[in-house]
Length: 123
Length: 123
Image (tube, each protein chain N blue to C red):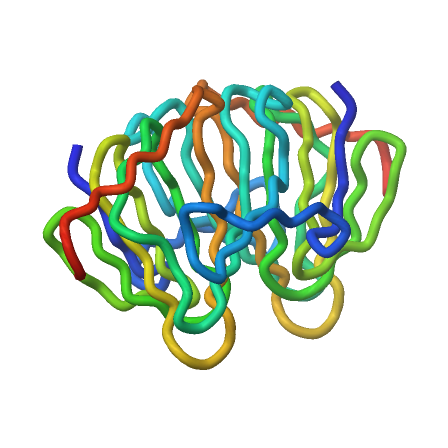
């Protein structure tokens, strides 16, 4: 395989249907590498994702902005330099705080994902 | 497995022996996740890594600073938002430019790595 050099701003962004004010870019492609790939998420202030589970784990790094995140029973505020490792199946949610957009990298295995929204009331 | 939340500045940094002015942090651990883990590298201006190969691929995201990087026969200048995918075995080198330190994330498979320095003169 050849090396690939890409600029984030030249990559397609897509809205994340299950989220609000949330968009996603694939930075590397599923199946392109050794079993994992990188995505970048941007959440506008006030936007985010409701409580949900995924079939794949997330290894994440916060690039910019601030968000309140729930993982399992824990709620934390995260900002640039926070590292999150969310195992497959653990319920989690995101709410981007006021200010600049909340941006993070999210590395996932290439395995098929399925998102399940947990409709259990307001967090 | 439990979710893990870490702050980059609280994680151990180690000098990279094969590099100059280069240090590394494991953000997630080898064997902790689904077959891959995240590291963060910081290269002081003028520092970097000589031309070398690894046994594992690199999926990288530039966080800060600027560097000149050689990959195969190509030489590029990279900065925040550049995404690099360097397949296993492809020769590459880094030289951090003047200004702020050059910082990037580097995701690798959990497989055993071996670095081989290519002593083929100045780049």
